[in-house]
Amino acid sequence: MKQLKGVFSLFIPLILILIFSVAESSQDNSNIKVLRFHKFQRNKQHYQDGISSCFHLKSRREEGSTTMEIKHRDFCTKNKRHDDLEKRRLNLDADQVKFLQYRMKNLISGELQTLSNTQIPLSSGTRLEILNYVITMKLGGKNMTVIVDTGSDLTWVQCKPCRLCYNQQEPIFNPSTSLSYQSITCNSSACKSMQEATGNFGTCAYSPSTCNYYVSYGDGSYTRGELATERLDIGNSHVNNFVFGCGRSNKGLFGSASGLMGLGKSDLSLVSQTSKFYDGVFSYCLPSTDAGESGSLTLGRKTSVYRNTSPISYTRMVQNPQLSSFYMLNLTGISIGGVHLNNLSFGENGVLIDSGTVITRLPPSIYRAMKAEFVKQFSGFLSAPGFSILDTCFNLSSYKKVNIPSVKLQFEGNAELNVDVNGVFYLVKSDGSQACLAFASLMYEDEIPIIGNYQQKNNRVVYDTMFSQVGFAEEKCSY
Ligand SMILES: *[C@@H]1O[C@H](CO)[C@@H](O)[C@H](O)[C@H]1NC(C)=O
Ligand SMILES: *[C@@H]1O[C@H](CO)[C@@H](O)[C@H](O)[C@H]1NC(C)=O
Ligand SMILES: *[C@@H]1O[C@H](CO)[C@@H](O)[C@H](O)[C@H]1NC(C)=O
Ligand SMILES: *[C@@H]1O[C@H](CO)[C@@H](O)[C@H](O)[C@H]1NC(C)=O
Ligand SMILES: *[C@@H]1O[C@H](CO)[C@@H](O)[C@H](O)[C@H]1NC(C)=O
Image 1 (cartoon, rainbow, N blue to C red):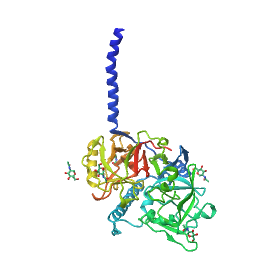
Image 2: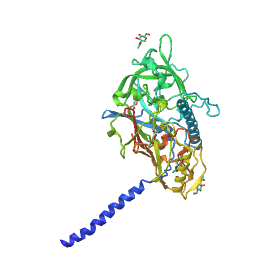
Image 3: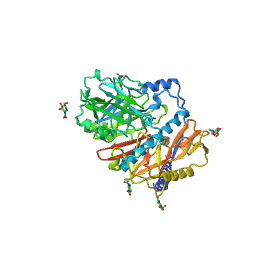
Image 4: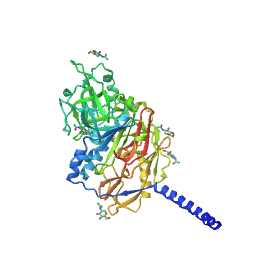
């Protein structure tokens, strides 16, 4: 007996050491992520499956919340993934960010500055082309697959009779076949909220005195038509008299989507219009593009329906009266492989979190510091030429997997966005021979930093407009 006890007392420190070392190594691991290169080649069948699986996206209702399947549009189109497409996307993203900066600067200064045509090509329609995540909702009983945008408010679909409509996959919405469709008169409060929601006053059409709307995404893309109400079904819940735009003239959105769902902050956004059901809370998990993976868009406060694998950490939304329609946050720090970059200042306006910008943009001095730390830790790899707005690229084609330093964005209130391994590198070439750090520099120090959708992938991002906070948690996106 005594002997046994002796053996045990020997064992206990051993066990403690083992537990301790496991804990220690898992802590180490959180500063390093493993990026694997899958050689995923899409064939014809994938495209066919992809196109059909991008419409009739699923939805479900649980515990009072509604969850909709969300997909990336890349998999819905016949375009092959090749360098030109990727380059075009990043160039569009650059134009789009220039335009956003211009808009925000005007709002902050309260004056309209002139924008020369050389600064931004005003006919490109970049914002709508760059928005890439789609869901399917039911409007007047008809499936409508639309892109989601946290940066605008009015939900709209292309509508018959069309003056100018692009080609879309689903039949165009036809109000004359719907009994629940009702156009809105110009003396209604919804028509009066148009200015806040779209920046343009609703205008009156005479006999019948309906409210006409116009939303310009500023870069040449727009939608114009009649403001109306209709029955909206999302999940198994339905909203009567949902205010939306019946778009008779639409430009800038190409193929594969019937319109747009606005998830911004004003009264006319879907979030506000459904707040009595969903409490002004929505969240998403944006899937990565490869293999047509699904993510989800959830309406409602019940966090138990999410599939997050880490606790949700919240940070307050920065209230900036000039930028009231944008979701602004207080980014306070960045850590690379566990090393905190010191003395960072992201400016007094906060940073924009946007579902419609691809690559995260940082002030030049902060980007330089981040890049220096990243390159220091990720050393010994062949470098590769830069690509579009990305200037830090590697040739990793001889590796099946590489360890990369983790990237974490820290916000006021100890909230943290732990960037998924797929959000750290932008694989220009899928064999890894041109893998670029997926962050970019703003043009000027005083521009507003933006957290793009590339860095939000495989995270649950919760927008709580009621309590004015945004939350982050890790999640492997699925529907
Ligand atoms: C509409 O989409 C749902 C899935 O969201 C699908 O089950 C249904 O068949 C579609 N209806 C039509 C008419 O295509
Ligand atoms: C708007 O005008 C119509 C007549 O054109 C009238 O019947 C209706 O009551 C008015 N609505 C409001 C909210 O003033
Ligand atoms: C911190 O940054 C400010 C300007 O952004 C600079 O003036 C100051 O010297 C820096 N402090 C340290 C300790 O690096
Ligand atoms: C962000 O938080 C820091 C630290 O709490 C604070 O000093 C700073 O003023 C905040 N910035 C904004 C834009 O609210
Ligand atoms: C990447 O490196 C490999 C050798 O590791 C080389 O064969 C290949 O040509 C390089 N590719 C590019 C695009 O530089």
